[in-house]
Amino acid sequence: MLSFRVALASVLLVSAGAAGAWQVGGAPGTLGTLSAGCEDLSAEPITYGMQYDLPGSGLPDEILDIHDIWLAGGCVGCHNQTAMGELRLDDPQFGGSQLVAVSSFRDPLRLRVKPNDPLNSLLYAQINCMPPVEFPLMPPQDGDDIVRIPRRLRAMVYDWIAQGARGVDGDGNPLSEVLFRDSLEATR
Image (cartoon, rainbow, N blue to C red):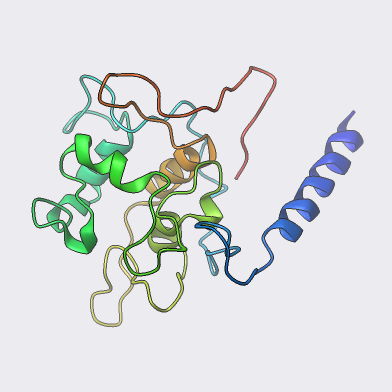
């Protein structure tokens, strides 16, 4: 049984690599793998069921959702009412709708968050990898020093994107069309 799982994982990895090859032009999110030089987050535990904003969440308690990560990671220091980078993360009613399946203002062919595909999501590339040169690291570098939000928070962002970048719309309905069953597992 273990050898079957290893073989299946190998086939999936090879398929994913072929699917991530660079393409010329195309629809938003189809340019190929955005992320290069990513820090390995595999030692962090997988967080299942991450959503954008849950009722009753918010700091200083434990991190329950993606909006809490923006608060804990200091992202709202710049991405607030001033909408630095045309992105507002301080208010959950704006943040999710400005991230998921939305093109970057710098390059309309790059999606900020491509559901189910962290390696092709600009957000993940900026917080954990070396994004394309036209996009800055997030948070911005401090001189020559690369500053990162904590590994655990970056891993939670990865899990949220990999699991479909779930959230709720203005009426409280799920934004994601992704369903998970007990027999499916996410991996990093």
